[in-house]
Figure 1 (cartoon, rainbow, N blue to C red):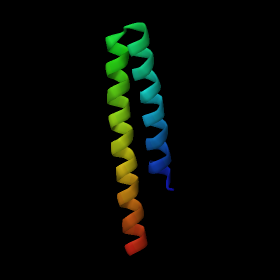
Figure 2: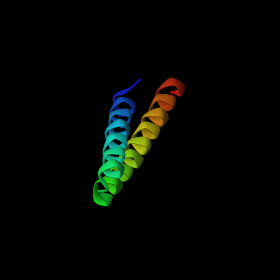
Figure 3: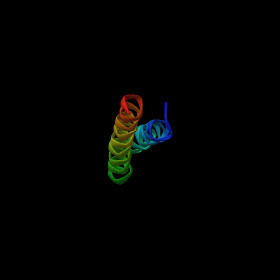
Figure 4: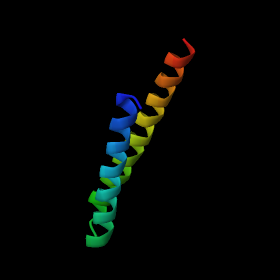
Length: 58
């Protein structure tokens, strides 16, 4: 696992926590921030996957 993959996973987990907390306490803003952070984490992890594939192939 490379650095981008790890950071992406951390952002996803953090986003999930925010999203869940927002749902539980009825805070739509926190819920939406969590969804956005989760999406950013997924993108960052995917970018890390691509970087890893490039390094393996190159």
